[in-house]
Amino acid sequence: MSAQPALGVTPSQTVGPFFAPALLRDVKNVLTTDSTEGERIRIEGKVFDGIGNVVPDALIEIWQANSHGKFNHPRDRRDLPLDPEFGGYGRSGTDDDGVYWFETIKPGAVPFEGDQLQAPHISVIVHARGMLNHAQTRLYFEDEAANGADPVLALVPADRRSTLIARREQADGGVTYRLDIVLQGRGETVFFNI
Image: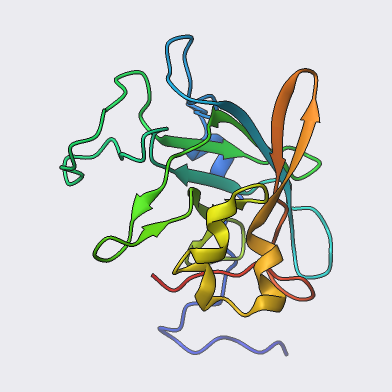
């Protein structure tokens, strides 16, 4: 005789995979046009699970300021140029090898509190199977001098900061920043509870 679940109790289920058919019909991983202002860069990496396997069906979203440090959002009322050719939002799925990528621009510095600025960074949200809630992190640039004074990065223990720093690579005449995302376990990416 097999055990039957109690009436009214829903059995536990994992979430997804549903990102590709439901949320990635309109992939938006190219954020630039020929007229977009700023230094063009490519961001790429892989998503890994807790035992080191690639996650082939994750969804990565990014949100960033333009090259002047202004967000394309009505709440950003600062007197900085708004680039009409740059929205600042992107979405990419991972492929069978766990790879995601974006074509974008390097963002400018954005304010924190008072006159303090944050280092140029990109906000990253990760959705993946088995995760009931998304995970939020940041991507910083390894060649950015302002990282040392960034107030958010300073809150991260020194031995964990490398999980947020994208490595710069020169390839095919362009700049690529590589950041792998580890969802849990050894080398886990720092995620923020925002």
